[in-house]
Image 1 (cartoon, rainbow, N blue to C red):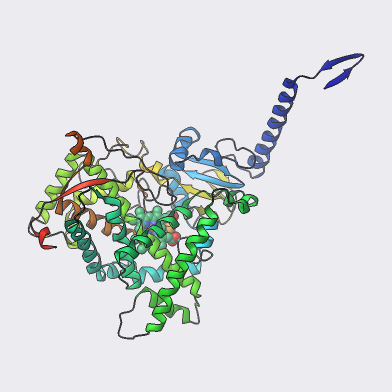
Image 2 (image 1 turned 45 degrees about the vertical axis):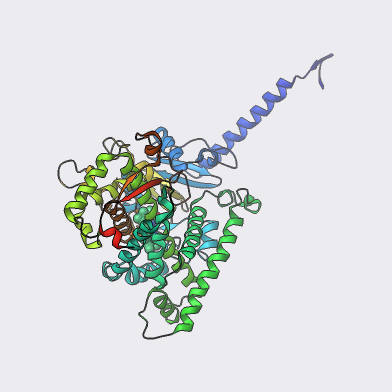
Length: 517
Ligand code: HEM
């Protein structure tokens, strides 16, 4: 092609078109940046967003790590555009305090996602319910029926029975291969929460398929779904997540409907009341009527919270213990001292197993389940930490980054349970109320109500595994020496599993373990 210039004709080179396209792109990007950063009044630091996708491309396969690296450059409060959504990323305890304590009520709602709407019956459970009277009532009911110290004490026999059943299963196994720790402990928490919430004992096969259904739900609820951020692309379901949600929702609904139908049909006044009865009673309450879908949503939230949270903690803790022989020796000495060799560990031993408690806390610092708190949402515009935060801004608290913050933790990357022990070397109050350096259960109004239950399951499970057995890695066998065990994680939405499952070989350590047969 040519253009006229007086009487001369000059060819227009390809280079000209490339430059023109580049100039056009720069103008579009500048306008985009001006419109979004300027008009929303945000002067928050953050990476430059691309048109349409914003910063979605920067999340990578491990978003907690990608965002932690970006926050080193942009600071502990960073703004991102995820599609058309303004998202703040919080990466320091000071900033976490602003959102979870100082302005807790303002940010106490949840950012609704397609997965939350689909799997929790339009957000009518607890985890994804908007902040308000309904959420408060449901949370209170679950705490009263299931999670209060009194109810936890009442259900102690269930936890002890189920952990002993797990030990029995290991003892009785005639499989010559190393034990898959994840598989062994994954049904444990599901069995416990099913017995506590539904008064039902399921078969191992049912529990395994149930655990994997809940794991899939966790993944879907925590994933960054392009359709949530770029709504006009939702119909394309680019990641295939919507299809997976619908499939899992059908299975979940079938299961929960059956639980409710059986309970309604049972109607036996002599059977002790549980959470299902309490929810059904509330549904008849004239003041606060609950639909069947809401009952299913609340039950689902309890099963979800109680299932795949403690097992990964046990698996990570076992990995660290097997990597650190000194930690293993200290743990086993403590168990010998407090419990001895004549019996297995009971829950009432746990308060005296202070080193074991420190191991679980340190595991949660380095490997929090999950790496981000569930997305919080601003109810109205407000100035926070000197920045104007618009209404409906999403807030993502990077618990993983906070747990590894070198300003809060000495040798932040290394596993040192001693930092949680009282006295010399103690670095932190792990209650999470005063000190937001340690946030695996969140803080403020939306803080996890199942902390005590989750911790009890993780501590009891770990204590029994280490008290009843000696462990070695299969790699030790192959090479005659201790090989480096990898500690790589996989991003799985809300939970935080190992990328490669842990395999280890147990040898019975207590004589009374043989009696468990
Ligand atoms: C050690 C295991 C557990 C860990 C690490 C854990 C962690 C968390 C985290 C990080 C949150 C979000 C807090 C926030 O967004 O600010 C949460 C919320 C929640 N957890 Fe847990 N959790 C555990 C065990 C449990 C158990 C056993 C249950 C119940 C059976 C449970 C039920 C819930 C519920 C209902 C919420 C939503 C609270 C709300 O939105 O008001 N969790 N949990």
